[in-house]
Image (cartoon, rainbow, N blue to C red; front, side, top):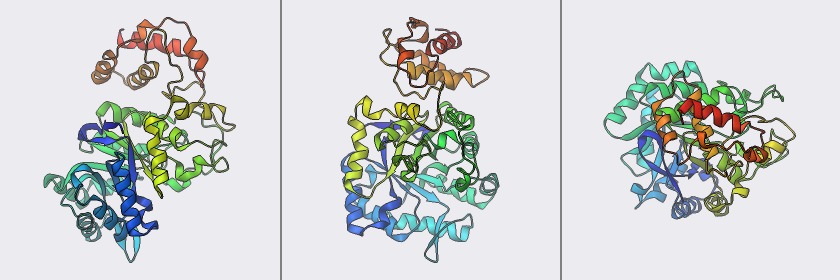
Length: 380
């Protein structure tokens, strides 16, 4: 298992994480064993947005004796009322729900205290201007939550979160289908009126990823498989199916992403996700799937897929393209991006203009032209 630093939290989390939303589907002992099995394969981050007692008890029992080797995303504002999940900002429910989380997880702290599920500007304003956010800061001050996070499906809310300076990481929905869609305050309406005019990554989403990278705000990923729709050609907006390994690779190649949290029903599904760690470049290749899809296109857009390799000059083309995109969107090139660029072994100025990379690019990107622009922008 490979590990990545989750932004400014400094936590080294497994690239493959555990999304706990399916735990309640199974017998308690079976789900406890599933979590322990995943942990034995190196998975060390789990998301617990679920308010139901069964799911929380399962995670708590699975972590007994090894709590310090798990990183928990525990949500604040996810409550259980009359046997049902309710997202709320009402402190008479929020406070006891979070205290219940600690009790059932058998712990006195949560590594990542997640401001739960903000998708609308109205909800953002309510949360950020009242007793809810005061409670979050109080938990952080008392070290009951070690870091403040937030979950959202809306890149506009994500950008606001980055700008706060105190939100250190974000749980965000990332997959190639979502990335083509504009921001919405209601996830259920995202696919209304969907047509072929959308191509490539939506500008607001691309800007959000750039802001996270630039400000060292780490990302963990939810909905990486689009609820299974991207695994099924009949339900996929592209008209073709991806594999889990391809979708994991897509998420992990977005700027700022540290871990993708997959949902599991069986050990075989855990094995399939973890197989990403030893998968070949061919197995990870999501780019060819998108490029050949009968619906929609990323033509002309670099997705950092790495198809351009190998470069005869040894240039890491995908990484230079990523730094160029991060820098060119800003009025002034951020120093942090320049430093990362200059730390590369080879730079864009070393491009031989042989165009061999362009013959391999599924999206017909003008790579040589981008290398010239990057060399000019960074000065080497």
